[in-house]
Image 1: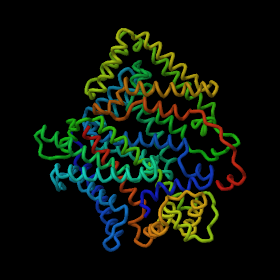
Image 2: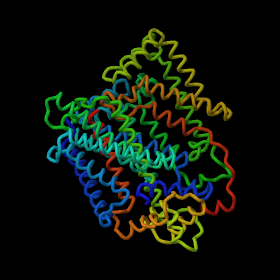
Image 3: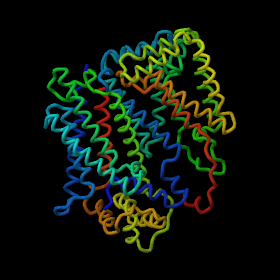
Length: 333
Length: 267
């Protein structure tokens, strides 16, 4: 006898296989949908992490207030005001924050609400980027690709834009060269990539990050509160960086710059740089960001490394596929 | 400050609803002395719902932790067998079809939570097994990396389930590619198996036949005997909405998110 869960999952797959290409594309998640689901999962994870006990304490509001110093008053003052609001009403505000993020995850996860949720996630992410992350420290001089610049949450917003489901993007006469190009076109998508990774390359060699011990101290400081294996990774990475801050910063900046221009290169080289981007993002996420310090408690998100890897996947050059025949085109309509 | 108790109560209430719905599915799907093939999943949901509600709200606590550990160890062994049977008959791809694997992971996570929290409760001198210790941010979970792995799995699978439910609605609304209709829809339904089942619960007979025909034509059957598949297709309509496949999946989503929440606040 067929079981319920098999009926749901297996049935969809079976139907997707039933007509070649067209039905499969209409029903089974395509590359963009998979990436949307990845974004949904991260939003859901954020919402769940926001329920941790630390978030209901003054420690959370102090953490937000800590992003204000170094920013211009026009940026810092609203951050401080928000922090005071959260201090005065920790339960109400934090529960609201958590619920919003859970709903964003669930909304993007459901096909019927994906557009509404993506639009809401852009607004929410921009607000959090300002009031919660102090614009990622890009104006305060504290930004580093290792500590999460330009702010993890702005990458959520960028992903929401680049993964926006647009009508007519099944147009096989003019297929998008990669998923992120579907809603905004290749030129704008590549420009966004260049700006993001180019800015990371710049942040890698700012004054605070190119000192002899800058990167070492940043990585070594992450070990506190982490499980043994992750602390060991931190210590190993820190020992490699010890007194080699300038060299490491330059190497990191070069790699990031190569990635920044990678999407403008021929497909084979573009793929190589996308792989480099994913590997580097994950390496930073593990060794430099400690998985967002989720295991140490007090993390509101998994930080930027995972998001950068997800973003890079959206730029993976698409494989050419045969154009639809009139018959299969008709099935899609 | 700990996680406010009313938040824990809300999650506990959700778990009780899941347990109640799953118990209802067990009862509704019973034919004489025989249960539906997926009764084990509903039974697991009942057990997990009750256990998790007890962890979230001390007033709902029912059994000692050691008993729950034993119960969920059995559940884990059972679903391990079920998953291995699926892999034997359908190949490794069966792991990705989302049938028994998530329940295996849920069972394992329950064992992990109870085992870890028990240790923490002793260490902190607290009698309460559940969230009281964890929500205080005392780091009650041993091997937190495992806890994070469970969280990531729960979240990922919840999102996947959500996507599939949305996809099923697309089926129900007839927004799928047009397909030819079999002249013998009943026969097609019998062969189509899973696709027919999900559609029977969701939409009109015409669409059932259409999709079933497509599946039949492609040869993408589930390898199920026609007679049993036919029984499955009638469940959602004749026994009421409780046996709709989406109800089971919704329960799994709620279970997964609540479990991820519990693990997160105990990290």
